Image 1: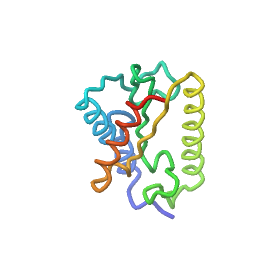
Image 2: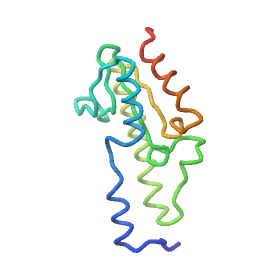
Image 3: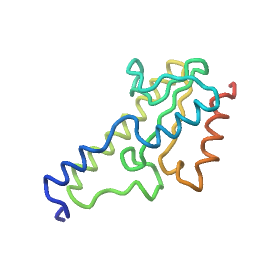
Length: 140
């Protein structure tokens, strides 16, 4: 299947996709900060450079895009129809790396939480953020 954009347009579009400080990340960080939680962001000292690190609660939060991290059963995690082999390899490698990083962090004693982009849509955002806050502050 042929791409509907020219090579230059596609390149420009892909260059605009950020790896940190994305809208979903900012939504989560603003909420947690408003609740009085203090954290580090994109800390490279830990496997996977977690989006949010809360040392006081020994908790790490990843904010994942459904497409880029292949959220199971999500309508936004759709495999592209062009260059399928490239995308399959790339996206499944992302998913495997996420699982590996989570295991490593848990082995180091961290509680690892994941917030998916689709959970931050208008109809689910309040419940998602409240649940996240509860999971972070609850002791185990």
